[in-house]
Image (tube, rainbow over all chains, first blue to last red; front, side, top):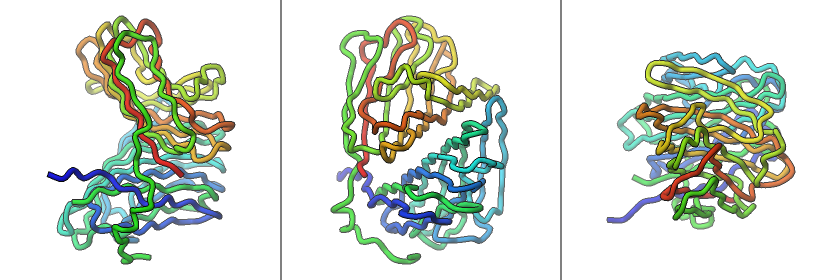
Length: 167
Length: 177
């Protein structure tokens, strides 16, 4: 039996400030591992994940947020995006790293995945987010991944790495 | 670009996830270090450790940096129904188990580490499970290594006391560019 490993897409590197990054992916890759290394150029606050630029209410997530000794959970349904980092940031130039694993074996099923994110704010300190999510659109395969700043921009140098495994 | 299909032939020139290095300890040691070629900007680490004594915590360090106090990390620890958080700053390592571990305890962790250029800080995500006194625990860490002067050139896992037992294994994979 052939063994299928992960294949790497060319690295996306922002050459200037960008409000959103969209990376097209092959529908042949039914498992995706995404690594985003971002730097905010201002108070970007939240970071959103979408598939196929779908801004409908097709996302749900259960999250676990940690900020110093405070740990909190929350479930969100009928969302228009997955909030990778949901934090009332007041710092510019925050650096963050998120890894996303998502699987959508066929076009007719819900996509499900997990996110782990750390968010380093120069003044407020480091925070962590971990979440499980669903994208309930069952019509399409995943053909694009979008990472969007809720406000302001990602700085030049923000990188998106995508690895895909075929069905 | 939505709807533009990426031909699989496009991956012929893309950088794959490459094996950087690894080790299986043949004898107990207080640490294990894997050299890293600085061409790799993203590292994936898989570690399976066994303590030969009360090793307490595991430390994760980069480039042998144990003096800079530029590490900071936010942890979530889960033990049974109890969940706790903690932030540590000004540390000289990332501590991967906030507990006093017994002898022969194992700890498994996976880590993603990114340092896109020499001028940026290293960002790290760790997911760890360990078993003190046969009570499994989970720890999630988001961390930063604030040294901006160099790319990754090595990864070290260090026992806070005593040793890592023979059979401890580590594998490091990397992405370029």
